[in-house]
Length: 220
View 1 (cartoon, rainbow, N blue to C red):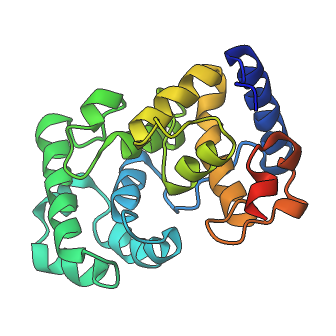
View 2 (view 1 turned 45 degrees about the horizontal axis):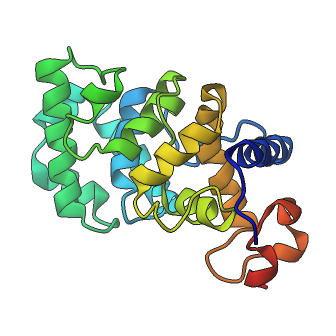
């Protein structure tokens, strides 16, 4: 099979985005939140856990600790009790408290609207920072690469075997897509991954991208 040129891959990537937008629109975060602080907390909690599970505990967590100062002053055991149903709740409770304390001490009780400053907060890595910048502040500074985006980028041959980390996949996608599209891609691919491009038994026969996917006929 001849190697795809960068120009052709960019054209195909744009058609993929056009179809995903037609199917899912801009996409909506599956986590429930009402401000950037709540979003940051929710994304930290979602590590190694489903968004559905996070949405079950955050209403009480946000009602009990509505502001960074409230969470910063909370006893660790009380935070653990609320998020106990989630995996790694003790470690996550420590991260939430530390995150809130840093917001109070260094960012005037707010979450910084800066991709680099966000990553200084406990529990916040590149993926979380991208999610917060996009969904919390409406700014596209990168593309959040979770398990769905990582899998789909490889299946669609937008990334290669050499792109073996989320950071490498993000860099590849950022070169293929215009920055104005970065803000949508994670949400759209997550929805697409859940509906069609599943990790097991993907629905290639009914997939709206099957004619653009080099892997489609292999996965069936």
